[in-house]
Image 1 (cartoon, helix red, strand yellow):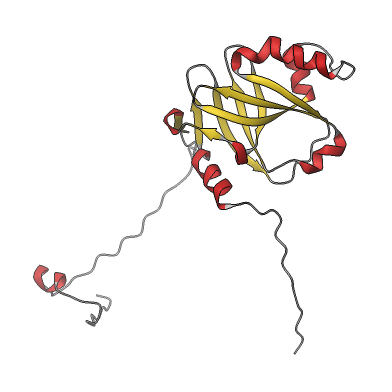
Image 2 (tube, helix red, strand yellow):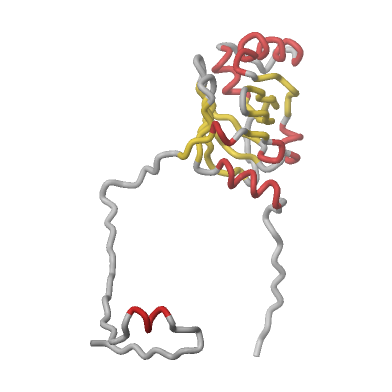
Length: 190
């Protein structure tokens, strides 16, 4: 008889606090009438091909650390930012996104992408912009009063089948209610 020893290694470990935070926002949207966040999937191992900009999002009911792709920043600002000074990039982000509670923290190059925490995708929308934002659930501080359940989008052609098998009993209601876990009840097909 051949036996192989298998050792299992976890792909990603998360703490109970982070798991609870993820479960709080999973399947929900955050809406405080100024900004809207539609929470999506977890990014267990970020595999970005372009650089990121770390930002903080501070607004009514939310305080979070997030990441925006450089290409999204370029689209939002309307100019190429690869050759801009990092200080000037922080200034441009402050000028254009400070109203929405977005603040520049730092630029993250390709070499630093491996050190990113667990991320959660979300669609960030406000009066002027709509983009994908990658939030870190570890430091997410969110007021649950602003969370709303997302409507479930099930396909129209999905079929539901129910199986129900009634049975007859010769026991009265009183006899059924007095049964204990030690009583034996025999069931057989009709």
